[in-house]
Length: 369
Image (cartoon, rainbow, N blue to C red; front, side, top):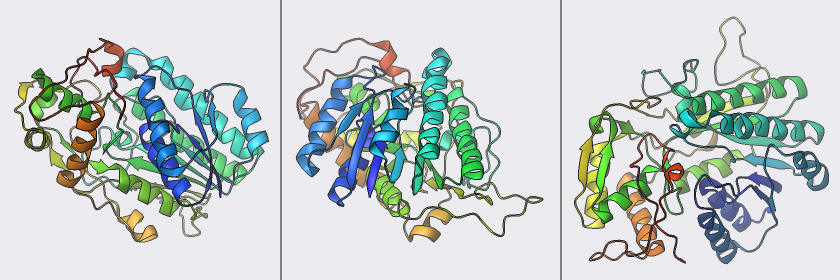
């Protein structure tokens, strides 16, 4: 298939492009290379993709630009995998307009492209953040998600609703994927694995909000990608049994559906830090802090629908996944068991305002992998 992947130089996007190329698909990438975190990491991911899977065209374009109309008209993708977004929970507290432009205006442009130039399937990234104040776990795609706790979560919920309206009005087959705490090699530097690993190797205080009592359903990147590619050739059809008087939240009469993609094995944050300490060979300096605005207490995915429709559920446990992450982290940032980070670090506060489990501090200077 000819597949357009937005956010192609991002964490999930890069792994997705690599897999699609290795599977023989024609891929067109799109990324705006914004400065939310160091774009040099995105450039390094592109070199990794091309070493591993070959070259592909990459368009440096913002989702909110008028050029999106021309992109769809000229490229005519058969499938769209929409992974680009303004990420981060805490960043949304200080920079709300970024979310409106990227996550709402940008997604509207994607939907309009799929409307004007029909596609076989639109697959887009949602988030476990949509569950918000819902405390009934495990989270099911049939649960109510009307109480988001951050603008980021609200924007992802809005994406699901926007996709449904376009599926209903224009017959666009659309599948939303609610990702749960994705981690692994080539991850974002505003996410907890890199933030925590940096603090541990540098001996800086590791700030654990909610006094470290969060639990997260960590999902290794390869499991995310395997789930996605299995769903790609399965565009949804309308549910003929959908009852408007007793509506199910995960399906519709329109060709629209939702899936959770998570490990279904929530881990306490303190246990997560224990494992990172062991793999890095260093003890963390833990600073226990109160719950932060926008944080969800626990995440835990019910993936029954994913397993039913793909015969797959995420399989890589946290120890194996973090072992692979630490191997990449120590290689990419040139860390040895006996040494800390020896390079200079640019102090860029913006980089560290992104995730509920962040440990604010300086970002490592990128070195060549």
